[in-house]
Image (cartoon, rainbow, N blue to C red; front, side, top):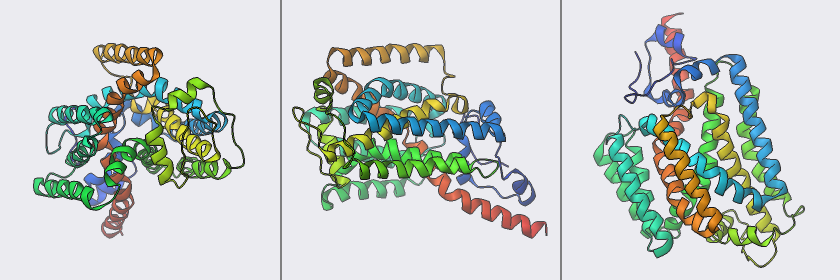
Length: 376
């Protein structure tokens, strides 16, 4: 007996707990999210010992490459990653999420309604970049709660959570800016990536040291970079790179402040140690986030989408790159909508991933206890 899955989503056969479940009859919907990310055929192939080790090795290579690039040329690495690699990641992931019905197939609303709602709210959040009326926090807050509806079907509970999210804005200083600026950036590209690395280590047939080295390095590398940046600076990049950063300056200064670095960016000045530390951190987490997605081509099979989807991906990607080539600020505003939309559409998957890694050890322990009772 298997837990419910989204319609049209192929799910690999549950892995390490197959025998225990067949003996005890124990099932849990909470461990399913660790499995439902993956393509059925390639996911099964990757569960061999060699396949798992190979994927962990690729992940390690991506981590080390991202760290090296971010250390040597932090601002340039961030700009290239965000403007060139980022858009292709957004578009390919949205096409893959659509194929998986946004992991919302059994949610409180239909996947189509979730897509339409996310798109409309994303428009308001994007317009807030210009009008600065605080719309972004309401749009993102609403989607955070609605995405929780992928797992929570109790409408009164969801309404209560929504009321709490909005009420907090009026009682916690800086809460709105945190939601609007921090959730779509550091929370998405760093913490959610960490969740998926941990889930990858947990889903293996055997305990893999390399599998756990990767999430550990993802935690340690940013700390080392920030700590050492005061002693090992970099040259100030050219005018193009500095002027391009001006589009991100407000958000990056806010993130830097939350990290205790207090960067104040001056496009016509030099990079102070706190600015170098901030850019190394951001360059590392963004480049790693993007490359980590492409490193899982075989596992996720994100490239297996329709020809129509590929035409749309290539066309929109070319338009986004063209807008950046015309003027970086224009490219930033043109691509912000796509960037934010992909963050919002991924939220149901993030909820499932987070619940999965928390529930997995508990579910495994209960299954083993049940097996011990039935098979002494």
